[in-house]
Length: 119
Length: 110
Image: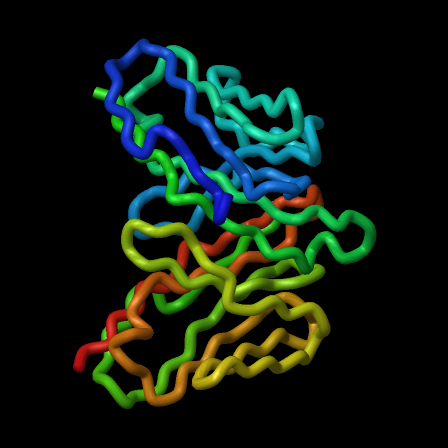
């Protein structure tokens, strides 16, 4: 595809329900990142993958949040027993994933995000 | 904990004016990136600076990385209404992730 896509674009759910947010990275990109962004603020890192391996999940707020990327392509961020404080824009990004010494120079391409509203 | 602080948080100027946005940290970063984000869109990378003291220019935008690689600045010359947006700095974290500042919301009025 041309860019990173996310679905759904908008999700309204009731407190206590589980939600699954999907990210489809740019084809061939090794690295995939999940962020949460409050209105007018910078993205807050949640977790990231290289291929199917979750490299760092230190940014996940608590154990209600989980993510997977079973085949190293599409990823799903799942929030169980949603709470009102989970309402935010959830963004996914992907990068080529060159590894080695230059990983910190890579460009991350962001998707349009999923706006989650928990009532 | 690696943190990036951006200032100012908000900036409203007239077309043609110059401005500088700052990104500061007490931590050393391998690189710093600057992104621009428009309403309803995801952040888009403007530049990556890697070497301490490095200066990069992108048309009317000048980016500088501090000698100690703890801070960076973005200077815009003769701002235009099309420059309006949220400017974000991001540093490469020790775990391979990106650490973002809270952003500077720039409004350029015609």
